[in-house]
Amino acid sequence: MVLSAPSEAPIRFTVHGAKRASARRISVVAVDAVLLWGRELRLRGAWVYVVGRRDVRRAAREGVDIASLEGVHVVCSDDGAVITVYRNRHPELMRNHPGRRNAA
Image 1 (tube, rainbow, N blue to C red):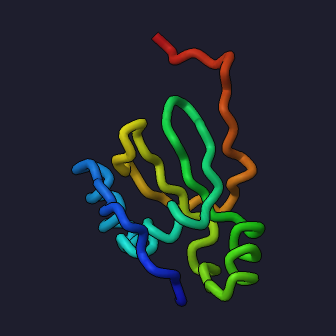
Image 2 (cartoon, rainbow, N blue to C red; image 1 turned 90 degrees about the vertical axis):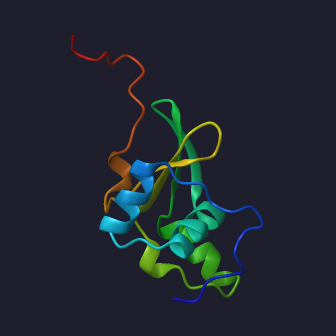
Image 3 (cartoon, helix red, strand yellow; image 1 turned 30 degrees about the vertical axis):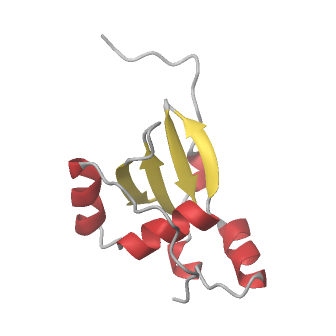
């Protein structure tokens, strides 16, 4: 995997986010690349950064290989801390459900 230079600001992880990234073998460098190259979505009260096929192609045009990161999601709080990290091979299934309520 060929990635660009890391971002200037260090990535802050919550305890949960650090555990999830470690358990799922997603490195800090990979998280940084997702934050840099992925799409930014506002879902369920959090910022979600997703690397999809289009993002992989866009990065490849710039000479950056992030193909191994396709499907990686990084969920961040409003203050920028990484809440969790996971792989989802079907990002088209991610939708914000504004009418949905939590069961009591």
